[in-house]
Length: 251
Image (tube, rainbow, N blue to C red; front, side):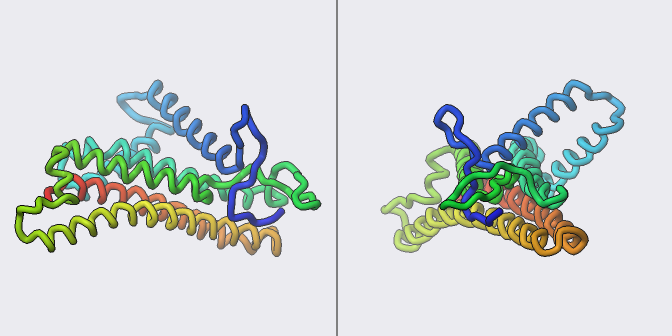
């Protein structure tokens, strides 16, 4: 088994390349959708069992969103997207830790690369694939722009970036507008590389420790990565929420 910065190709389906990160992302998506349907069908006025856990998570995230927005209407509007981001990212982060729980380190298929047979693992977190984190960052930033336009109107929202040349002070306003445009692109870069870097580094660390000492020594690092996975999901969701809140504020 070798450490690869890019996701490893497992197979092709109808001409579409299926990498291990794509496979895990699809599994996470199906898992979230499936659990949502099951919980929705079995909702009780008096919660019990799994519904208690589900409602506790929803309530915690809802209170967190409300503490940032300070506005019940905005909370209702932002909550579904922010909660989805948090749940999707945290499960994506944690699913990459499965090889550390499997005796032998990982499961996968053997392929010939450069004349050498290596193990291509099935499990790789979608968050350890820069393509996925970049796509997620783009979605988060675009939704924030959409929320801003919806709240302020397109003319007032674009006023943050495009300054009226007949309005004083023109030079300062233009400079601030340019900085605002640059900051929107910086958000995408910051979002994608922060999540990718932390999760990929964690998977590399666990892989190395499992190769050196396969049993008890990697356990502290496993618990550390569980904590890091939670923190990174929380940071991604909170920054998304803050950017959405900022987008809906006047100039």
